[in-house]
Amino acid sequence: MKTLIIIPSRLSATRLPGKPLFKINGLSMISNVFKKAEEANIGEVVVATEDQEIIDDVKKNGGQAILTEKDHKTGTDRIYEAFQKLNNRKIDLILNLQGDEPLMDIEDIRNLNNQMIKNQSQLGTLAAKIKDKVLYKNENIVKVCTKEQLDHLNFPKATNFTRKVSEQDKNIYHHLGIYCYSKETLKEFVSYNQSSNEIKSRLEQLRALDNNIKINVALAKSSPIGVDTEEDFLAIKKIMEYKT
Image (tube, rainbow, N blue to C red; front, side):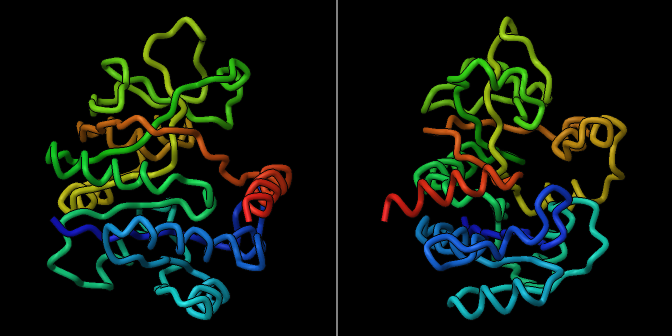
């Protein structure tokens, strides 16, 4: 099966505008993510964006990028437009990687892709164990509830995605912003209107569950920090620059 990785990215993020072009080790965050996706070596990688500056940056650093419309409500709508524009009929799976998670583990990306192929799933994502109890109360951290306890071999179904949980709830994990769709499922997903649960919780994956699209979950080795605030960015920058 053939996989295409699409990374949606835009400069006008509400909480931290301009973050895709913030520099880490002299390279923009979006180009760092692009290079990480290429290292996973599971298929072609393309950035989908509404901003010419992002396209110029990605191309200058040896990557591929495609210009999309400005009025998309979600990242998934943006990747579907890019997928249509690329018009590659040989693609079976579309992997949506977030442009603000440069610490995502390559092995975790590969594992999700392998689980999708092995289980012939409609839609898959990743989650990590919650090691810090503070995260249960942090509503910026999205949690996923699964039917069974996650281990490194299984790929159980998600029963819910939420921002609020109690520690007593069973099979609760930290949801990571990465999705892998079969091309039929991606087309079906974007054909639905945003659901009331999705709008209320600001979680587009609830649109899938509300329309009976099953989401399977693989266990990730670790929870990378996403960049939502300036503090997040400085923390990631410190980690990545220390490593080099």
